[in-house]
Image 1 (tube, rainbow, N blue to C red):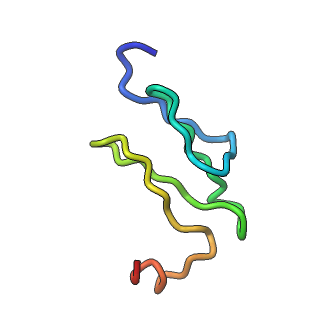
Image 2: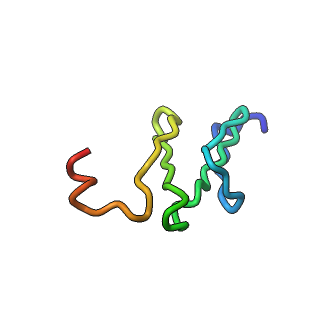
Length: 64
């Protein structure tokens, strides 16, 4: 899509986030305990960042 910086999609669960041009597919199953993880997008750089899985404890996140 021209003149659009980024389109960010969910609801199509993938094992790994993907980018096709300026379209980002970020639903990596962060809601699926034991299977998925969260994916975040840095809006300044449009970098995809792998987040924690749904089982991550607050303590393990502090020690990253």
